[in-house]
Image (cartoon, rainbow, N blue to C red; front, side):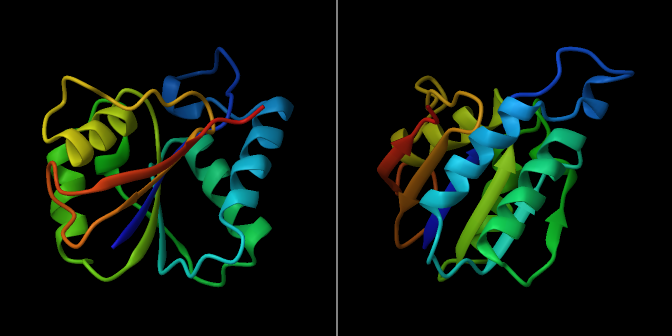
Length: 152
């Protein structure tokens, strides 16, 4: 399995709620840089948090790549979700190439769990950071971190 973890781009500091925060112009540029790293990849799914900034990030990536599939929106990719919920989803997609679009602290904790086998060493995911992981089984401690790319 090839797994891509993408944190949303820079978002406005305030909105009616945290879930309603939108990407800034700078955040859109960050996401376009991240999307360029995915060019030519045979993604089988884009899965995103329902929060506005994650939806906007996923849609930008989808557009940049010309991905024809729909964006799957799931509640288990919000900032404080339990990474084990993501593992349940990934367990059913061992041969897939999936992009998950989410938030801190979840996205860093999930990456750390997959690579190190625990949550004490989360991946340092800044806005629009993209992590590339690979492994035969998407389980705690069984995936290898191939790349961690931060936007300029």
